[in-house]
Length: 245
Image (cartoon, rainbow, N blue to C red):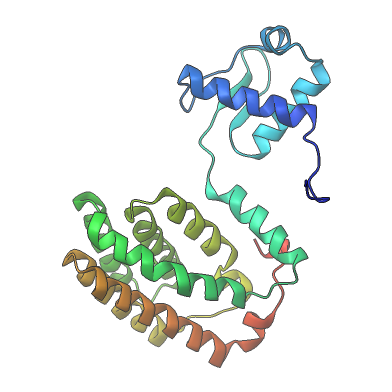
């Protein structure tokens, strides 16, 4: 029996799915132009309003960009985790979820990612991970660089896990749980502790030790949560809202 919450898909949404299927069938890549409007109207046998609504929907999803003017039109893009972060933020906001939700999710997910990264990460990605650790160490007095490298380190491990879903999920979670945006500060002593944790995680992954990598990541995330609970309990308890993204 169908759920009462399921809604029939709009014509424009169904058309968007057909357009994406054709992008895949043709083997289009980033930067490729889609057929002009008159061709698409004829091919899909829809009205101009429906087609334009479909294209706007795909633009919002990051699948295409719409170039204005002569020679413009829809151009294939690479969707990123920003769209996922927005969708998750809205779901969590209307579910009255606090920021603690994101911290708990990271505690469950990131140790598994580190375990997989120890088994699957390429040498190039491992070198990039080491570069992130070194850059953080060289800039412990600069919180902006610290935050950039903190995010890059976790992104590299997520994508290095060999599981594409993990990569996008961590990108989205880190986008929502941006410490600087929600009010969590990192004094230099805390930055030094984070660097030490990153170095331990890197060394475990570089040693191709899945268990040690998972344990090191578990300690790191647990330390972060304890720090936030001790210093910024009101931040973790605050409800997630879209404006924080």
